Amino acid sequence: GEATVEIPQHIVLRNFLDSIAQPKHNSAIPRIGEYWPGQGGVRVGEMRGQNGAPDYSLILPIDPAACIEKIQWGSRGEDEPGAQCSFDGLANTQALRDSRHSHPAAEWTAGIVIDGHKDFYLPARREFRLCWVNVPELFIDGAYWTSTQCGPNVAWYQYFDGGLQNSSGKEAALAVRPVRRVIHSLI
Image 1 (cartoon, helix red, strand yellow):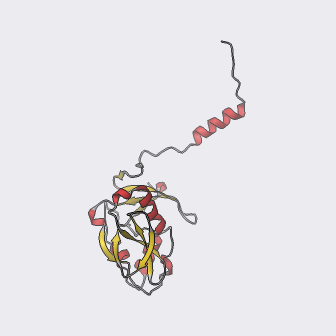
Image 2 (cartoon, one colour):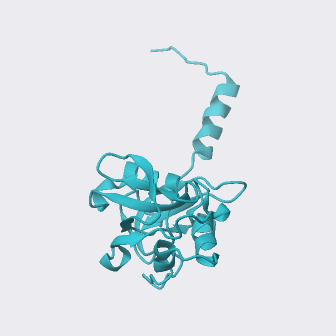
Image 3 (tube, helix red, strand yellow):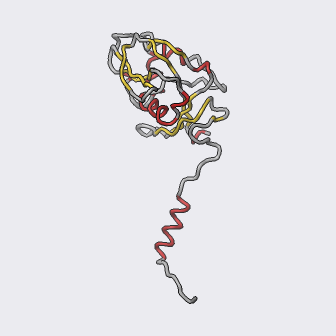
């Protein structure tokens, strides 16, 4: 009947501020696992930018032309210091492409064009881990090269039959699935 509820003003203000501060889902950005029209593939998820770089969505192409079943990482016995990052596949791939040594897997990604995009690259270890966690159904079981070198003779791969990451000799022929990134502030 005549009961009243008093809520301290600071609690009301905090609840109001929390409600307007909640990030809203940008309807132009598809949910994880959905195709992103005009961006070259399926949105895998969000990657945290490293060293002050912005966060970005990782895009996995589903076009059959963006998959090769057997190709070498390349240049066994050659150290590639610019391709050792576990997070930044774009920087790793660029270092491999710019190297004076041959890196067939990285070089192959340079020829991929989907939805007008030419910026595909070999994912780094952590980027491929996100693929395994969020969209494993988009992969055939097996081993896929990452862009991350493990040493002069070996590089990391992602295995999609159980999530294992391990290293293999650079001369081995494994599958490759490139990715690209979309920085939200640029769309």
